[in-house]
Length: 217
Image (cartoon, rainbow, N blue to C red; front, side, top):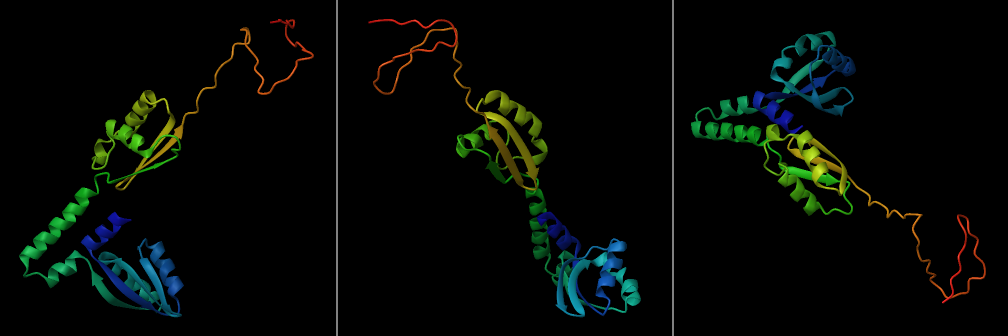
């Protein structure tokens, strides 16, 4: 979403007002012609405001005519219009372009790591494991091999039975499933002592397997 906004601002877009009795038909025809409109707000019963790209504005004139609608440009937004406004300020334009380029560059890195599913393992411990295997804040997205990281973590950490890595934008969402401890296996063929939590006298023993043996002390 952030990248789309940056793209629209770089290429330029218009805030327009559409007025008429067939606004729904106007929007349906725009959708049919694959004209993208966003940020639509109703002003009153016969008027709405919306946003669109500069290139698409040329195409809606025919649609406005067919639907008896009036279209007015309310605002012009984007770098193109800002450059025209400050065309004599070369330093400002240069710095502005550098800022945009910096934003695009920063979008290629991971800046936030979110971990879910951990109950027994602390987040700090998991962050250390991820950092050790190549996933940390500031990592270049194109160099992150999620499959390889998952395999290494599962092999090296017995506390984790499953891990998933989902990278969207500048965020890395880590979902884990903790391993359950193995129960202690009791060998039924071995002898063992039965200890009662309270004092009492054993009056009878029913042996299910083999024979009961009484031992006096």
